[in-house]
Length: 417
View 1 (cartoon, one colour):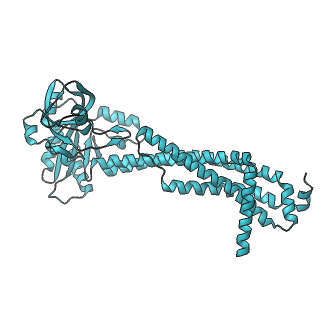
View 2 (view 1 turned 180 degrees about the vertical axis):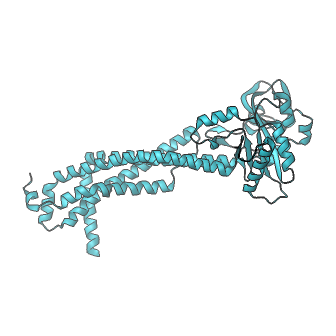
View 3 (view 1 turned 135 degrees about the horizontal axis):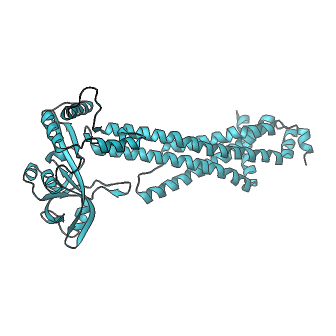
């Protein structure tokens, strides 16, 4: 065993010495591997980041929450035209639908509604443009991930009497009220003033965009300003606290109630979209799988090209060192020693290239994450796969040059000038 280890150690020392003796050739060999491994690793990080983002979006919908929209993108994977046609042809989800679902499901599910618009909001000499103004039913806080930081939430009394009150996001609070408490003070939207009765807890950012630039007002107040028939709304349902209902049952109850509300017959397609966190995650999985199916073979081509470069460089090395190989064979080296030496040399080159490629990819991913605010990181499996692939390339594409070196006739090799 000691003899076997010494053989491998000697072969490794010779391989390292040969690599360092021809630095330029080694650098050119490594460059192709670096680029190929870096591309594969960056692609893996981007796909992982996209999957994580969509999973966070799904989590933002809340556990056990079912959302009803006019049309949802995950129902039309890869068919943008069908999605556009659905948005144009399907009937809007209306407040009548909301009231119908609430009546049908009141004993088992909470049913809420949310409407969105964009308005400038100001106070004194400060103003913010494009702030998301949300109108919601009083139970909307049970159906979304918005939590209260201080003050109070909007209630049934506010909704019923269409009171000019609002709950503001953290960004709005910090910008319009930098030096004072916002509770009990007023902001101006659309020519009207609204009293701030609550401030929401921070939601954070997504892809570099803050989710805290919003204002919530009572549903009745929203419909008084924007009208109740000017836009399609979003309905949200969830099992009541006193009910033991699975998430799939909530989805089915909501779908059936909506079909009854719309008067759809058995066999008719839904003219609305049902979204759950599970459906969003499934959609994300389909999209990332399709992208991976396209991108990974393309990056594989880059690695194959890098492997051919390695093989060509190693063949050149064999030709250049023919006399050296003849001397080693003449003084007692076995053919297997020569084979091992050249395989180790090619594997060492590609492994070092893989390590540099991973480091380079990690730097690129870090820069992209800082520049975009997107949550990106190199997954552990990608690191392991990158190093494994780079080593495999060295072995696979180094076999032919190594076998050629091992099969040289020592006499002919010694004659080589």
